[in-house]
Image 1: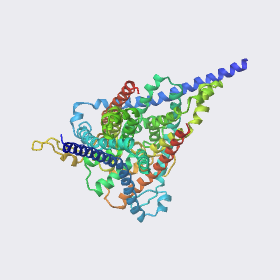
Image 2: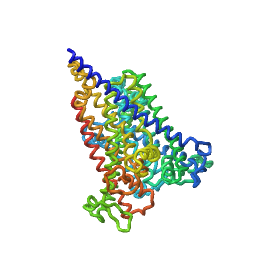
Image 3: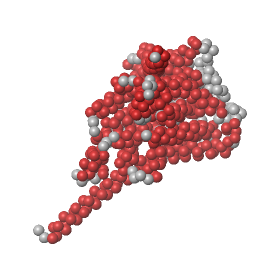
Image 4: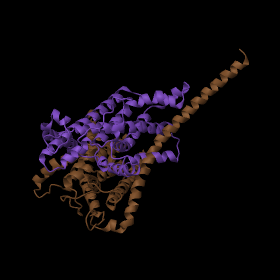
Length: 302
Length: 309
């Protein structure tokens, strides 16, 4: 009897140890994240000032700023969002609602999941060969935005599909019963219910694109830009100009990379300050996505 | 109301229906086109990489490419052996896996078997954040925080080394490993656990000896997806591992990976169309083939565990 009690106690002890190990390894990983954020803030915060946001890069670390970088990031993201969001949602709708079960659909499905696993730098190589040299679009905002759009397209397609798949069949049947066509059902019933989840996916995909560095370096994002692209609003008719998409650019992660790779320590502090901006942006976007996802799950019960 | 009236109304109805049907067809065609775009992207990627690589292999023999132990394409006496880049890639990946596999697996088991619902809801999104941090920020962290920290323990460690890059990549891919593993663990049916508890097994025994073996193909898929991420990771190694091709498997040495080489060449200004320009496409093709193999194995394994239950 006492032997059995001993065995039970031993097993319980192991069980307890294992749960501690689990807790430690999980919080260990989160601790690294906290240390990373702390390190960035310690190094970068002293460089934070209004001037840092409204200055161009410079040879002098204390004068350098991220003006052209954040403007470039906004410009690139505009192009990326305009290209990737409609295309991704449309593709997701087709695959979930329209696609017949045949070999072509299978190929598209396998293809999308494989594309999601392709390293980002390979997209950069493709863009360099295809957009920059074959199509001769130049190393500009348009090329950069399209490259990132292709990169996040699989993410948006997958998010859209998962969102649509969660809508119960009864919703569609009710709509068909009222005489609605397939598109009317999709447009007025499926999409509105799926939209919060799709939005979550889009936000996360865009937050990835904002931090993406390698493909933009490959297509030749410049690291020293002391001018801004032309304003999209012009004083002449038709008041909107698209000249800005044809200009060279830099973005925040590329600027940060440039500062990290310099030997002088003062530039590293600039890199940390740029890193704070970048981190805050991505973490904020992810937080928004998490909140939306959480609220959707709480509100909708099928 | 004469018969003519009904004819007119009928044809109006007909034309309305015709309009409606052609609109539906048009929309379907547009959506199909959007879905096919993914195929065009793949064709673009494979087409460009193969096209440039074929021209590369016209001048460099494939045998030299995979056996030469020197990679000096931009020197006077060029050597085009992919092995040094491959050794760098494999070493950093190995270090990363040594971090990500234990931590990711334990975190997955803990979250699905031990943690309360509340804790899980809070910790899971936080863990996901690890993969949301921009890679260039991780590079900063590896070079300017982890390396100095390691140098306090190993004073001989060079400023650029594969160890710190690999460790940081490992932290970065924890969410890939843990979330797919957790998926797999979650899909193990409850009655297997209940059977095990009924035999008097503890939680740990159930988790390690019943749940893990049942979910093993899914967990393996998670590892393989993690490997493919680590192989393709660029900025961390470009920043922290140094940019010198070095045929070594010693993680305390500086070395260059396939991805870092592509970055290095892109930062310089190589003329379009030269052999030097084509090396990055040959390197890219090697990288794509590696990740493709891993991804296919991973998907196959994932499909397998989904079929079982």
